[in-house]
Image (tube, rainbow, N blue to C red; front, side):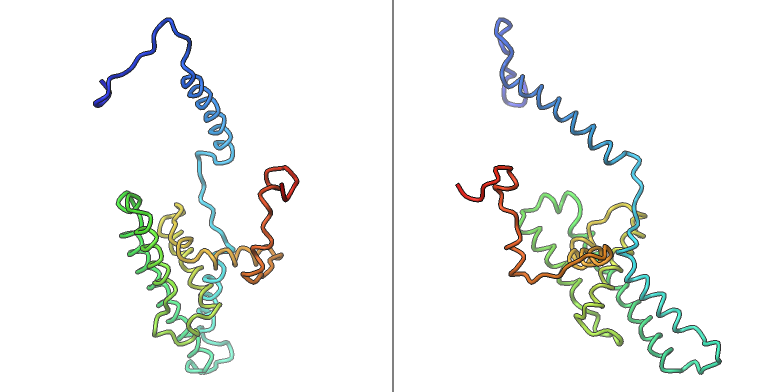
Length: 220
């Protein structure tokens, strides 16, 4: 008995069942696919730290730390440059704290079997809530304009760096769940050949499925 259903055996005098043929073929094809994947993704996985995605956070932090240092010409410690640099450092600390808090909420509500077993609508609602939290700006920021492009890039870069360091390189979905657009922008700019398009133009650039299938005909 297999559960509540009796195990049905095919008569010994009959030929091989067609579904058994299909199962054997499927197993063979799956083995071939696994072999190809093992070559592309070796088991000895080495995490890749993407400098292009880390650059915005790293540069902002290093620049502020450098500007806070005493000048060689003996300029006063309360110079305008240093005051702004100290405010910028404080802003960056607030941003990092916000990312850390977001990460805790993300791990408690958007990871694990309890999350994946939820209805798709519930999962989407939770992920949207995380994105809204990421998009919100700490009210205490002094040197950033809320919603500015630079601020959003630094926040996205901070999320990538923080999660990479927290997981010691093990892939984390958080940065890509809340800041995918900005991470893609960073990578596109890093290639040196990116183009910006209006949203209403982009659909016109899609390749028709007829060409993808190889028929070479757009109609009929």
